Image (cartoon, rainbow, N blue to C red):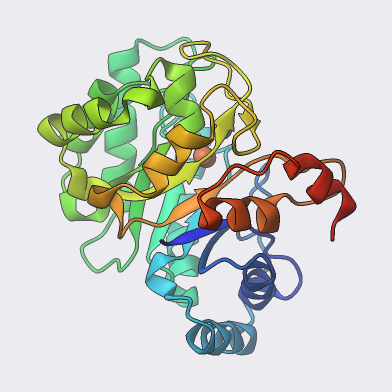
Length: 292
Ligand code: FE
Ligand code: FE
Ligand code: ZN
């Protein structure tokens, strides 16, 4: 299995992220190149990148499975605010260059928020923005994340994701990231994941799925909330998440945990160990809190 979690980029950049992933027993990871909620970015330190790549190689992390996540304040949908839309486009262009310089292949992007716009116009604006951002020489693929449908989020169902993909010119530069919490909250029953996957295959194609965010959810199916829960402690449950993780058709797809901290403690080491053992740990929260 290819399993990791969200980690911090921090002052040691990709090297710090790699060290953190290894401390969790992970063989992949996902990072933001700075704070998720802003677009302030420090320049990359090439020697740290090289050291990180060596550390990955020596410890069984294939950099092709490592994922970057774009900050969530950019909005590719809102073309009515030209300045902000143009900023989102140029920021993502630069971010792709940064990701390329790190040797990473994938960047996850939230499609955008339609706000006061017609949904169709928003989806057109997202595709148009992607057509400005992508160029044939890019080695990085943008992964559109499936969203919970909280507020005015685009990408809250398969049809919206397909619409965007259909309107992108460089089709081999765009893929999809499934988020199990978002799917649940958008109305997909993860207990019936095979059915969803079959529908996805017919409409979009399984090969487009390049990353899975493996999260439990605090809220019932269809709640449109987007609040992640620790593995096995939410409404999706351990067995259903294990089924996604172990799925034969998705075995080459990296799975990334974005579950919440418990107090000040990261849960990832414990959740990864539990998922590897394939057995629910009823003492998960205590183990995380004792940080042993
Ligand atoms: Fe996300
Ligand atoms: Fe996610
Ligand atoms: Zn989320």
